[in-house]
Image 1 (cartoon, rainbow, N blue to C red):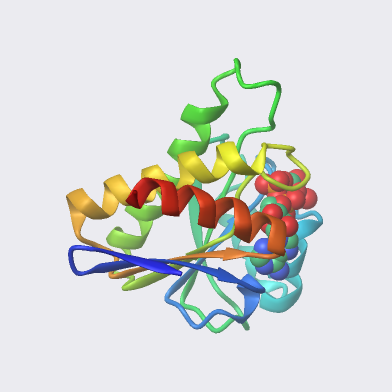
Image 2 (cartoon, helix red, strand yellow):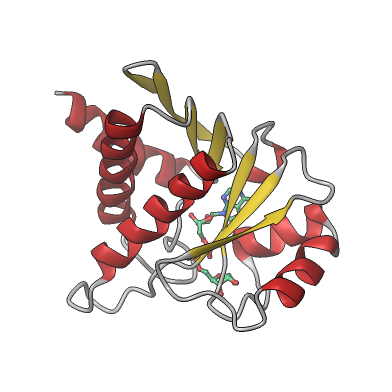
Length: 179
Ligand code: AR6
């Protein structure tokens, strides 16, 4: 499903983010930028070793939670990968929503700065980091919606949801935002 926000399109798709033909792909990394499982593992496997050599060379201190750093995309069909770090869910009282909002916003700002017309996001924090999918969907979609309304860039933001349950959670939230 998709919605138009002015001239920008916000869409939900069930699939694999490493297959997306977009200008930038967002990675749900850890603060050491050490690689890992989940979407991080998939992106590094598909992108090849360039991604890790770039993060190690340019960002040896890693990346704080809620922030993001850019690299090129190696063998992926994209120009950039934005490596962001979502919060670990600790019950919701430890600033998790603000940190998740900041992770999405920083990536959207990087997309504008790098003149990306299209960017694909995974459901940051909803895997190993344990963020409840419905709450993550609310924060993610509200943040993207607000950003597109204000900035009118990038022209396409695609949430790529790996499984049906996550797609369903995001679709319900997007529908309720439109109601
Ligand atoms: N395409 C799109 N989404 C995917 C893919 C894929 N190929 N593979 C998994 N997902 P997670 P986190 C979904 O655990 O919770 C890593 O080890 C997955 O179903 O990848 O932010 C990092 O190194 C889930 O909905 O990221 C960190 O240590 C979503 O991506 C830690 O995990 C996020 O799940 C980050 O945890």
